[in-house]
Image 1 (cartoon, rainbow, N blue to C red):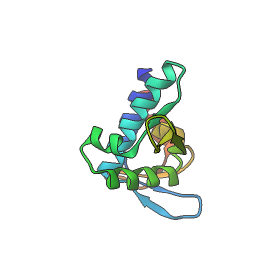
Image 2 (cartoon, helix red, strand yellow):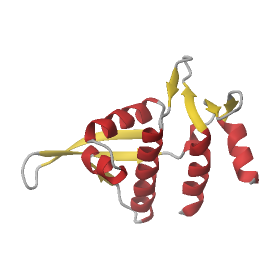
Image 3 (cartoon, one colour):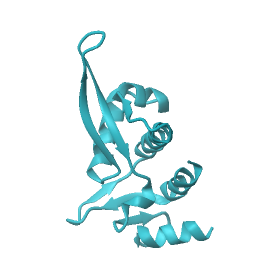
Length: 135
């Protein structure tokens, strides 16, 4: 379980933006990175237990010290770039509530999207992955 998580964290620290296939640049904030790290950690844990990952945005925000609205905005951005997939689930037990089922990728899985790396020209994530695996 540590390998994908460790590789993702190494890549995450260098990412400042993702360029979508249509050329749109999506800036990646530190909050986005904290949310992605928290979600990947939880997703990998539940996956190792052969279970689906369910969470609500308030709990995700609480885990990294941000409000639900900030968590929701970051999750929308992470969905836009393809790092997170979500499905709204209604929970009938204990009253009407909603939660989300998430599937989360690691940063190196975003290949072949282009990323901006700190203090460097834009590089392909595949090149970044090669650099990370050699370190």
